[in-house]
Length: 96
Image (tube, rainbow, N blue to C red; front, side):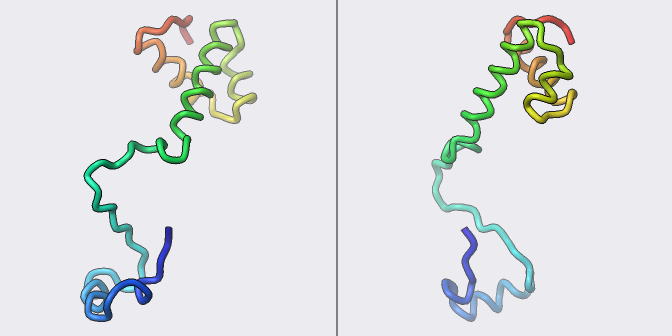
């Protein structure tokens, strides 16, 4: 979430930060030690996993890479990477 530094930081700290970054946006990481992995909080990782499983399943049922590319709005290279990743993990699949 974006916050204006003037509303949360003392002027002296803002002036110190401006010595390094003046007028640019910066990211300040969370202090917590137990950070969630990418995509866990908002469900993105789970959605991609579901989508990728569907792509692999359709591919195993002889749906072509080009059709999968069009259906899922992905490049053919990305579809192939998804399929190859499953094969590397020990999943079955025909060659690309």
